[in-house]
Image 1 (cartoon, one colour):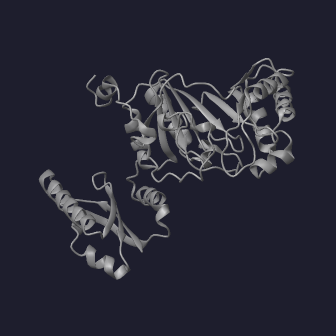
Image 2 (tube, helix red, strand yellow):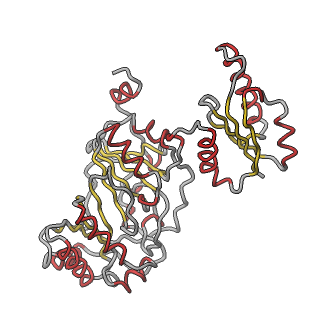
Image 3 (cartoon, one colour):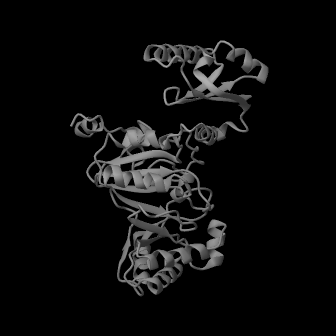
Length: 377
């Protein structure tokens, strides 16, 4: 059973030496309880408030361990069982807000992977969680960037099972600490569905203010977040034939098509991406998508991607000739059509900034960026 305890710190008498002594005693107690396996984690005992997560069998056992805690450091102290340990971050935020000591950087994002391309000065943030169930979702096969060294050339192979879900998600403070180490000018929000993260608008704002980056959001278009700090949007249209879209994703495409119109009407820089799946989302459907786009904005960019096998599906990847035919069909309605043949070679190496070592390679952060991040440059 997990229990949590919260409190707002006070020190009396409020002189510096006494405060340091009380905080040291608190930290010694925390370290000891963690070593004993009684305390799961502790948060922010130097920022005006404390939050402890205990791993005990009962409320009585928890109280027994709390008896020797330096409680003169805390006021408004309370103990409650956790409804679910997965709600840890949400409970922490709510309790700290009540105590008036909350800091935005403690918020837990849905970012689980950060990829970096030095030559392009590009950061890719991968978000977990989606509001549709695409049968051909590539995250079923690979949750980390497919451009990392360990996966090069393997995208054409048969998939082997379902990729495990990520285990670690970054707080805003943790994310910024990682980004501070790199020089970049553009950020891509991708992964599953970045728009589902409630912290996305805040992350985009911080990226603009802190790094002056160009922010690109990749989205399925079902729901649009606050786009004030998003510079460009790529909307993934799976199909315009609604029956086909429902079969592929489980939901109607009406919100997607409506939101594409709204994006164009708002003046947001927007383009569309679709995946060509031979025998399923065929050339005629790609042409229908292009025709729809042309009705929204004639000069919009349309990117056609080849399907690569993921999940338990019967479909095959298209040939280069088939990709060319799909592009030809789209060009009947649009002039600005770009497509991948599926045999392109990676021009620039991509590294994992987080988790460290994911994909078989890490990148040594730029020294100048490191010095700047600590105010030494």
